[in-house]
Length: 114
Length: 110
Image (tube, rainbow over all chains, first blue to last red; front, top):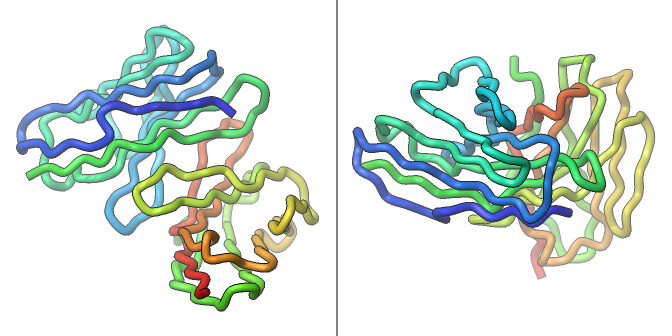
């Protein structure tokens, strides 16, 4: 399976600021996704990160709040903009591709907004 | 109604017992079914993946899918304390976009 890393692993931020989360994969993958896991809840898909084009957002998520980049087949970023305490969550990237069509997750970025 | 329903538990069993987990779903377009294990403060780890009705076995783990009833299960035989984690069912259509259950927290007592 692909090895996925995320930076930062955790952060504490002030409301109104923005944080960019990086996702790096050790091999080229077909698809990359960003999920959110709010405290005590399961995972919710935010968007599909498309290589070389705009991300595809799920209902309830918008580009102005969660801009996403994917400049190549191994890297993506998610920015959480103008943060509020409600954005406190674990943000995870996932990938599909390589030798199989199963989906693997990164370790997550734990974000706390004060 | 949520697309994927999963009893959050918690579930506590003695070491060596069989752990039985299940999910129901409402979207008949789901074709692919997965079980993930998530340890505290870690990302989900893929345990089982299947796309057809029936059983799939991998070591101590058996995944069962019944598409006619929209019901999936995961069985863990000879459970160990190291199996203590949250187990998430997930499913998708042919677009890789996963819909997750709430997750069931399992504790295996030594």
